[in-house]
Amino acid sequence: MNLMRSTRTFALLVFMLLVTSLNPGVWAQAPLFTSAIASAPHQAPGAAEPWWKHALIYEIYPRSFQDSNGDGVGDLKGITQRLDYLQTLGVDAIWLSPIYPSPQVDFGYDISDYENVDPQYGTLADFDELVAEAKKHNIRIIMDMVMNHTSDKHPWFIESKSSRTNPKRDWYVWRDGKGPGIPPNNWQSEFGHSAWQFDPTTNQWYYHKFYIQQPDLNWRNPAVEKAMFDAVRFWLDRGVAGFRLDAIPTLFEDPQLRDAKETSGTNAYGDPNLDNTYTDNLPEVHDVMRRLRTVVASYPGDRVLIGETYLPNIQELDKWYGGASHNELNLPMDMQIGFTNKLDAGLFRERIEDVETKVHGNQPLVVFDNHDNARSWNRYGDGVHDAAIARVVATMLFTTRATAMMYYGEEIGMVTTTPSRKEDVKDPIGIIGWPKEKGRDGERTPMQWDTSLNAGFSTAATTWLPVAPDYKTVNVEVEGREPSSLLNWYKKLIELRRTDPALRDGALTMLDSTNPNVLSYLRKGPAGAASVVVSLNFTAQPQTVSLDLAAAGVTANNVKTLMTDDSSLQSATSLTHIVLPPFASWVASVQ
Ligand code: GLC
Figure 1 (cartoon, rainbow, N blue to C red):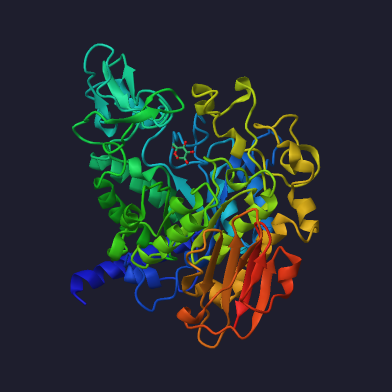
Figure 2 (figure 1 turned 135 degrees about the horizontal axis):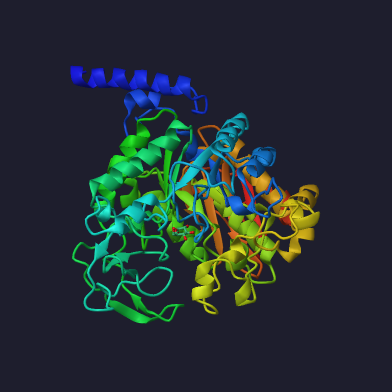
């Protein structure tokens, strides 16, 4: 070991001892210093597996989970009150959508202070309490980090806007227009219309990929990176387990600001569709990710970097892991699987195989639901077999090798409840784009806990969004009592994945690979232990399958159903001529 490196390692150790002793919130799971000493950005061979590899990460939209003070808006204390439930469900980590101070134009994704808590949600003390109480429940807290833009009310932007010569001018993307009233180019906001906003004080335009109130930071300025990494350290020092990086592919824009090419048609806002080559996924973002990984990896406890990575294909996803170097994000979300948006067995087979084989052995992260998309119940449901289809979706989520991510209410089958009148819409895109784009309120309605007032979410006379009308039957309390409920299906799956060695770690091999109607795969158990087969009928007709495990080197003398929603499959003892009723799920152990 060279002297320089050992001195640095020692300094790091002393620093971390200090941080840990000063801050009881730091997650001090043994082995405390292993990852710090190595400070390697990726798993050393033979090292213990990081906690997130087999985790269930549960997204909470804080406004909608639990209101503790009766103002109709969820808060941190509310989340703390519900930790017992989350532990019973089998949650390993909570991804908290933004809780920072914010004017709430984009409900927290417009941040005006990266190092505090919005009073609507509580205080930093409430946050520390949540981290500490969650730890007692073996649950970690993951923050949402919005690096692409700030709120226009952030002091950085207020300064930047004040004059062309302000030291923070270059923290944002300012340009002259092409002429009076003409923006610098044709780029459009993700949320409708021009991505440029004119500022009369300085006679220039600023770029905003999202709302006008969300000016983009200029990541070509090193001071921006430094400030943002300081915010990251602030939360790591408080004991958070990692970050979900918001809209991360949009950090950089083409420095020449070239006009985007028009593709065909118009979007929901009536604007022409544009090719996003000059605004999304620029290669420079990967340098930032590598540096961020180094910062995060210098902390103990396998802190995790998760990416909101909507990408066109698996090759692009692989880049976000750092490919063979494994030195960027630990878990960029694989949106190609969860947002396939049609139950097509062939498509799922292809996409699951892609992430198994084309990302250099990195760990997949699968997600079906979040706060930006109609709930999977509605995206995959056919209106007739919705409950069975929801079980198929859940089974895929927990029986491939992927780390699982879910969204509050998914486990009880909450549905999208889109406002029917424009005047009721809260999400601004629903106002800008009405009636084609009705916004994201529908997937953000309050969590349905029980049959009491406001489904047990709040004691307020009105809640920030209305509780969905089905709450008397679709709720945690009622479903907890029904053995065949979706909630109990989720609980069983989560428990099975936790306890079954094949489901936890086993290699995945597709079975019956040309079947267009049924998705079947094997998870191979460790030597001498059972393997698991999964068969999911993706159609409204009964399907018969025979599964041959020989190519995977598994013999199936003993077949035993572990989980199914069909009573006849309960007693299946063979892998030939298995009859799967419409949208049936079957999970069996084979040995
Ligand atoms: C991400 C968030 C979304 C937000 C946008 C802008 O896509 O998930 O809710 O509106 O970024 O921050």
